[in-house]
Length: 372
Image 1: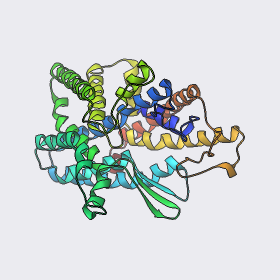
Image 2 (image 1 turned 180 degrees about the horizontal axis):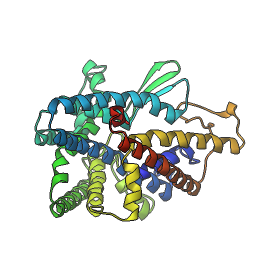
Image 3 (image 1 turned 90 degrees about the vertical axis):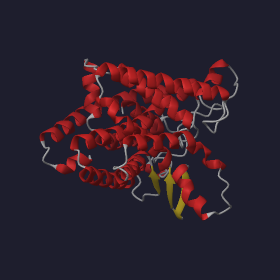
């Protein structure tokens, strides 16, 4: 969650964020590339651990119907939150000219599907998730006829799509639900690992992390399957390395899943039983993930407007929609300043998260708090 805020700060404030991709090797710098790349770990970890949390909750309740009802209702709620609170926080556009189906909606969809199939064995769901992760990259090879109804229905489930709802309103499916569902199902199946004896769990996480990263290296060197973007030699060794690790997030390719989830397992191994001050601080954020996600947008966006006005622009220069409200060109901060703002936002979020976490803890009788 802390790293995620860095990506969103860069998205909204960096001088080049609305004009070029941070992973376009023909235009980016190594610093900008890595600032974007390290945040790849966030979304797969969120989705995987959402599945794990669902398993832990289901195991604790031991009530199929209650767990199913909660997952489906929470999934519907997350989709509603995505297209209202999150979308407005992202764009700050009162006209809602862009609706984007992003990570929160993907998790919501996953919860609904998981709730429907909750009576299936976790192993069965895990196998289904692995099949999705390893095979969804084959979807483009399916020979749909031109303007095929089935193809038009299935494509937005597997690949990002943009639809013009009206002359001034668009729907963007940035997180196609099926590939992310695969990650959630695997996370659900792995829930039992978190109930293992500590040393056995640490060994399991280490093996899974190393295994996933090893498979990533093998498939990436072969350079045939696992990601639509092949790596190639670049102008120097550093950029050739960047090409090698420049994997596809939209949708999350097999190689993207292997490297990010591999790193996640190693992080879980390294942070096992961590009880120092850093762990205590970060736990404050982790207890209220959806609250953090929503509120940090409403801190970042006023900072964006302050930046724009301090740089001499007026309200007439603001361009909403995909520009987040920034002018078409000329606004933005250096990468160093982006990092400073990011640190400031994370620090500001701490007392807010601590307050809300304590409020939830002290008001367990308020069931609606379980949805935020």
